[in-house]
Length: 389
Image (cartoon, rainbow, N blue to C red):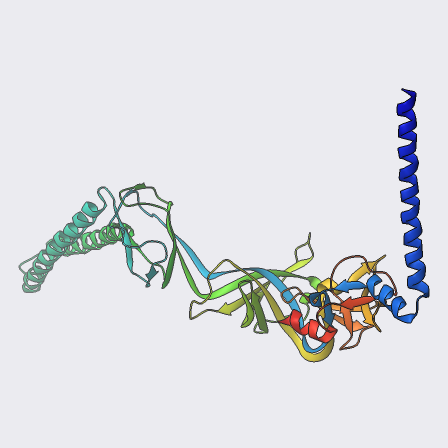
């Protein structure tokens, strides 16, 4: 047992000697690097610099930016109608489905409503009978008029014939009113498109029983899309119907669409202090579908030159916005004054503190004042071009 303890002690001393030798070698290497000339010092300094990818560096650009108010939301067809059953019965003769185009008045389906068509036919027969009765009463009145004029009919008898004629006229009018109601009910059993558009939803199948008020189809007119947004009260001042709107839409990153302000709510919401604004986008070619998320910029003023940077490059500490500018290969903390944000493009305007052409660190992460910055594989301008592409 004593022999084993001695063996472990020797092994421990050997490890300590090896560790000391390694530390001494590291110290010697650092000393040589620091004292071995300017070339080695520059190599060490370059190794200590933070290496960034080209996409991590952005260039502050000067752009012509128009004063605008931004609204965001979902683009929906301006006209949306739920076609409901107006009579009870069984849905038959289904002619359209989801996605089908329809024209105004086109028959979409029919409802077999018990007794409705029979009532309409009976009402038309009653009209024909009343017309025949009126024709007979008219001939009788004409004959009574001649007899009365010749003195062959008393005044009372003549008045009786004339009263019968007026009753026949009233019967015909009543029969026509009943026929109109019955015909209207029969027409309600025929489901027609309310306007020219597309069927966006079908809620029933052929042969299914339906009740009054049940939704059968949803018809939309996507030739005009509308976005319902809200803006703060102070930004709503000066907005007017007819103002130009620039739309950027998810799924179309390289296109800008143009529309107008349709209407503005006259009062602000008391709880949110927001004003409802409705903007429309023409879509005559049906290139867009309803339900797309969009950002609309309502142009409220003339254009001016403004410095623009990526939104991710703007940082805040203790409520003070700033950016990291790369100057002479080192990171410099620069306090700035931001302006409007353009969430659709992912940029923010800088009104003070930054000039166009300056290189800034757009990548997230910890940066310290004076830290050396080295871009691998590209110069800063080339990095910005790569980022934009």
